[in-house]
Length: 217
Image (tube, rainbow, N blue to C red; front, top):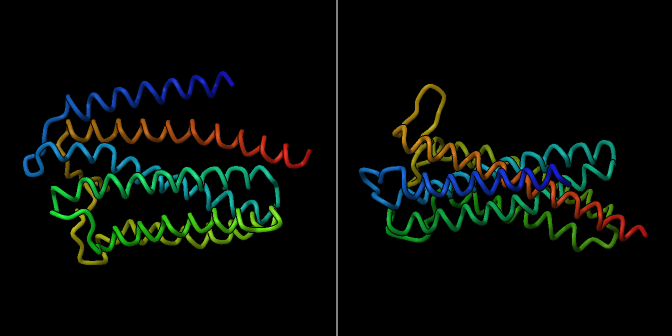
């Protein structure tokens, strides 16, 4: 309990620091101007979605192999948070795209594959919720989650494989295409959102345990 509170406090502090650095301390972009600041929320949301669904995939595989409830708690919790952060990534991307691309939405490869990811994992939650038997619903959700994770590398490499409006990755091995002050703001945002996700995940897993215990009682 104390550990969770401490983790939450760290997340809050990092988010506050990230907001200051991203909105005040970092400079505007030479081409996008002040709109580049949306990146400091958009990219971390997308990153956390990847992390959440990676955890979902691993936990789902372990649940199918061992049928241990704790793996289902983790998978279910990470799926819910992943859907939330994917939705936020789509929304912030749309807000960013409006002034930069001149449109809220375009049938761009990365946007479409990200939207597909959102609906795949939303489907996993629906499959779980609609099943008559909770354990059967958990197994079906696990299968959907594992298969759905195949979309993540497609999203990541979509800017390489397809002609796309979306800018390529700014951070690649041996090639950083971003100014140091902006890089610092982005890395701080990534850290803050990752810690926030870890905090929310621990809370959601505790809730999942309590819900399961209540149903069993």
